[in-house]
Amino acid sequence: MKVAYLGPKGTFSEEAAFRYFESDHPDWTMCDTIFDVLEAVKNNQVDQGIVPIENTIEGTINVTIDGLLSQGLHIEGELILPIGMYLLGAKDTKLENVKEIWSIPPALSQCQDYIHDLKAVVKHFNSTASAAKAVKESGRHDVAAIASEWAGQVFGLNILDRNIQDNLVNHTRFIVMTKEQKVNANASKTMLVVSPGEERPGVLSVILNVFSSLAINLTWIESRPTKKKLGTYRFFIEAELGAHEMNMKKAITILETLGHHARVLGSYSTTKL
Image (spheres, rainbow, N blue to C red):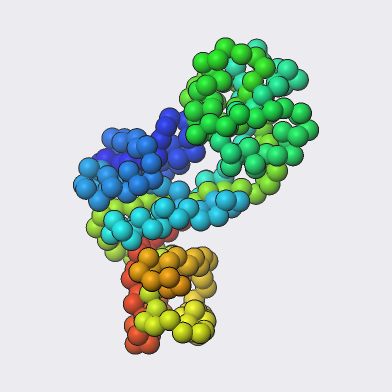
């Protein structure tokens, strides 16, 4: 089995991929961008791909949900990865000597209070992993990187401090994608994209009422432009029910009877670490 994931080495995406597929021992393909992962799956270069779709703090990753549609892919599973920000330094670096902190802007923003208390200046990198690698290669003992514990292990850095993010309840949700849709009789969630038949006041309320009337709990709703006409949207909806369940089948039938187009993007279960 071949699996694609978002690089470079030492990223949270690599950790998610290795943890989700650790018992399968796949052949890995590391990609430069999320879109590259999606294309690798579409073009049959790999059997599966894993990419982030949502973060507690940063929200939805739009390139992922847009790519699901444009590449015609399906969701087979999801992984919830706890995100802990670690301060990493070279061997013999002491916390009190750190004057600069290196990382990507989102990671730095998630640790603003900690950085302020440390009175350190920041330097931007294009990934937490590249920041960790740069600290390793710098040979300096007055700099540190904000990255994952995984990155510390990959690049042989010491942990100077743990869980330094301002919000300790931080998770990233990853989805596992395939080109062919598979039936999962044990699935506990379903993701749909619903395109309204016509744009009119209250159309989203009508769509949501279909699920409410069938007592289907929704765990995620996201609107995205159709890219056909200004002001027109489609809705990504995740329901806490498998696509094989009778009430989910009823919901899809009702939506289509009302003139809306409902497409199942995947039916799957959640893996939590």
